[in-house]
Amino acid sequence: MSDRANQLISDILRRIHAAIVENDVTYDEYQTAKQWFIDVGEAGEWPLFGDVYIEHVVEEQAFGNRAGSQGTILGPFHLPDAPLLEPPFELPHRPDETGDRTRVSGRVTDVDGRPLAGANLDIWQADAQGRYSGFMPGPPEGNLRGQIRTDADGRYEFTTVIPGPYTIPLDGPTGRMTAAASWSPWRPAHVHLIVSAEGYEPLVTQLFIDSSDYLDNDVASAVKPELIVHPEPTGDGEYAITYDFALAPARTPAMA
Ligand code: BEZ
Ligand code: FE
Image (tube, rainbow, N blue to C red; front, side):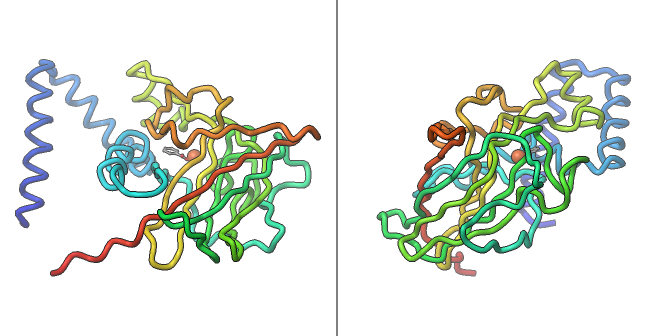
């Protein structure tokens, strides 16, 4: 076993053992926990559990001090290879898609404000009822998912609908654990993006809608104040969100 694995596994086990002692965990509770581990595996919810309760600390540890725009968790609902859209960019949606229409626009630059032409924005979001295509019943495959590129001045613009807040699945073991602890299962309304450009660190982030409930009580602990946006009414029943992204230079790989 590597020194790193030895160190990490020993530390995690030591902390679990300490929690058992400090909380006087009973045999019944241990058997319940064991069954819950089995249930999480059988339900295929380990990725969900990790992204809800662990990923935010990994993200902050990995990128908290990075120059440029703030990132936050990826979560379990990204699908690779969303279609590259044609301008004028509009996320694919149903003809009768409900929700407030909004334009989202801004610039992608380096940390010195130089525009990044041809940067890629991979975008995915829930619909107005808080449902992700490909994971939840309702929206058709590919709904509200797509990739777009910045223009020669580093500008981007796309239209979409304002997403709704949503709960993590309530009927599985992660939701049952959340209820057992009397915690809220809600995530506030947000749009996910991965902003990338050659020679720069990809930015995995989310833009949170300022009027959403649960901004201060996100089950996934992923909200950062810098990522809260205000949809400005444009006077025609629609909205406009502006947000600029600054990308940090790619890290040089450590020497072997
Ligand atoms: C999400 O943002 O889509 C998400 C993140 C963590 C857990 C569940 C969903
Ligand atoms: Fe999400």
